[in-house]
Amino acid sequence: MHKKHSNLLLKTAAIFGMIGAGIGGHMAGSYDYAFRAAHAHILVVGWLSLFSWAVYYRVFKPVSKKLAAAHVYTAIIGTIGLTSGMILDIFSLPQPLYFIVYIGGGVTLLVSFILFAVLALFMKHEG
Image (cartoon, rainbow, N blue to C red; front, side, top):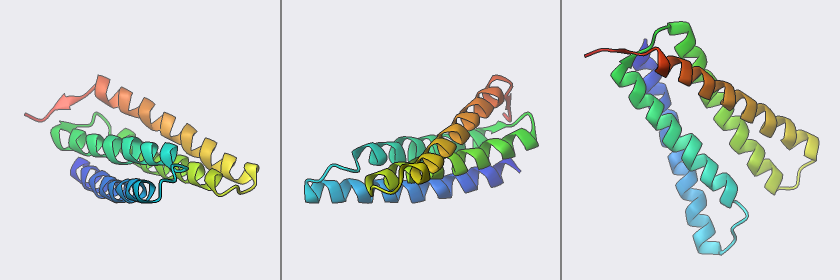
């Protein structure tokens, strides 16, 4: 089960990596840095964190399959929400719309980090 989580996180991290690199290339070519905060979050949370968690699920057996599943899905949903909300803000959409997506994603991502901390504190090494 945890290899399934690893694969999902790895594929999602790859998508975020491509998006982040694409935004970085656009900013470099256009000299328009409006996306810099979203770009940084897409790469750090979307690529780096999701990739790191993919590796974690390859190395360690989670103490709880349900806790691991909750971690993985809150990580992906939270990352999508947080970064999408940041991008929606750039396009000057009504504040309540992007705020719900941004804050909802951020809170979901915070839950994911808490779940990961619990998993990491009680991890079992597969050997």
